[in-house]
Image (cartoon, rainbow over all chains, first blue to last red; front, side, top):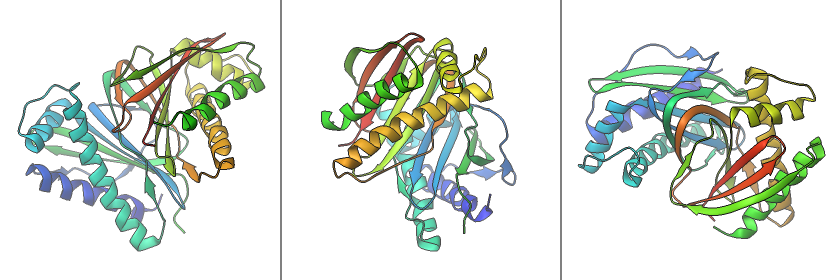
Amino acid sequence: MDMRLIDPFVNSTKNIIEEMTQINIDILEKPYFEDGDMESFGVASVINFSGKMRGRFLIDISKSLSNEIVYCMLEEKLNLKDRMYVAAISEMNNTITGDANTFLNNEYHLGLRLAPPIVFTGRKVVISASKIDSFSVKGKTKYGEFKLNIGFQEELK
Amino acid sequence: MDVNNINPFLKAFESILIQLGANSVKKSSLKLKKNMTTNKDVTTFVGLVGSVRGNISYSFTSKTAIGLASLLMGMELDSLDEIARSSIAELSNMITGNAVSILEGKGRKIDITTPTVVLGEDMYFVLGTVDTIAVEFETQYGIVEVNFGLEI
């Protein structure tokens, strides 16, 4: 898959989390092809989008980092199953994906529109690689690690 | 959430499964949920964008998922391997796609997104900013829980 489709998500994630929470983000490595199941770190959020291409953005965050992000956004310690906790993670993902898609739409005229964010958690969660090719990028902060996974069904023309 | 947007999905669920050869598909319950928790270990999601925006999820136990994947493949599968997961994703895609065609026939313009399959225990999901309507279907392979988080 074309790195021109991956980089905007990585850049938006770093910029938006740092801006919203003041937590410093280190992107650990270059994007790598995801060819198996992904074991969740703790809290995951997916946004699907569709336009001239179809795709998906997943951000998977360790519980300790997720707790800190929510605390920074809402200045309140909340439980993972609290509606506001989930709303904060949803909103963060919506802002990241919206920002990356705006860039892609302006740059490549893809007309991408977002479905609402899905947030999920559980025990032994595995996100199964679906039929789309996807690339992952790992990152870390002093509160824990996270992973991004970006998949598109078609190639950029 | 407008019930006129939900009915096509319920019809599509029944008709696709019956077309594939399931011999009993019946709605067994409908409830409004603030949050979606499920004790079923396999869930697929499909997103909708356009004049109906939201997410739909289909949750099954592994056993039900393997049964439905076998039905779609026309062969007996015995584990939730890549083929079975991909079949379950495809089944969600077919049901959602069929419902979207019914809605498009009523003048709506909707795109569907690629399905995502998630496995796990004691799963807790939030499908969007709205309350979720959950409908359960009884099939010969077990119960399928369909959750709707549609914004209009």
